[in-house]
Each structure stands twice: as structure tokens, then as C-alpha cells.
Image (cartoon, rainbow, N blue to C red):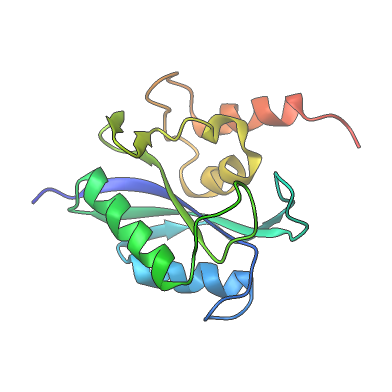
Length: 158
């Protein structure tokens, strides 16, 4: 079976079986396997109503699985870590998303690759720039670093 490259985003902002959010992210990386490269863990503010900051990272993973099979496995890992579906953008032990894959685009029930909002999310693009700065978005053709710079230009000054 051919090996496919995937970009997986990981996030946590709640203690789980493995400890603090950073420990949850590290444990999830081990559970996923096939990690070729991983970003450092970034601490980021929440998007929604959660008051807890997130630990976010991105991993370049190689797998022989089709995107749908990998997504099922990622959701199984989330459940094993104690993830329960609930409030959108709320606190979570672990969140695992397929952001990109070397096959380009994929639309299937419950799966859209590239992830539809990754181009707007610094908490994905900054770690992605560490792992795959030259990876091209299959829809726009833009590389990771220009996407990150575009997000940074849109952010208001504090």
C-alpha cells in the first residue's frame, strides 16, 4: 500500500488521562504514530467561550491509510483520550484534525481536506510553517508561509 503524507493539527486545553494539555498533545502524537516531523507546542488563546488557553501543534504524518480511515482512527484516539463532543470551540482533552494530505482535495461524509478554515487560523499556520513551510494549499496554490503572513497582516495591533 502506498504511503501518503498528512498534516494533522493537534490541540488540547483540558487535563486528561495523560496530564496537562501539553502532555495530552505529546501522548496523542505517540498514539497516531508515523510522525515524520512535528512542530513545537504553541500556547494559544481560545477561539470561543473557553477561558483555557490551548496547547497546539502540527504533525507531518505518513500512513498507508486512506483519509477516511485515518479520520476514523483519529476520532477513536480522541474518544480513548476522553474527548466528548459538545460545545463548539469549547474545552477539550484532545482535538485531532486532518488539515492537508498529499493527495490534494477530498470531500467525503464528515471529511473535508484541506480543512476549510485552516487558512484563517494562526494556531494551525504557525506550527505548520515549522513543519512544512513550502507545502502548497491545493485550492489556492499558496505556500504555508504566505498564508501565515496574510493572517498576521489581518490581525489588529494590540
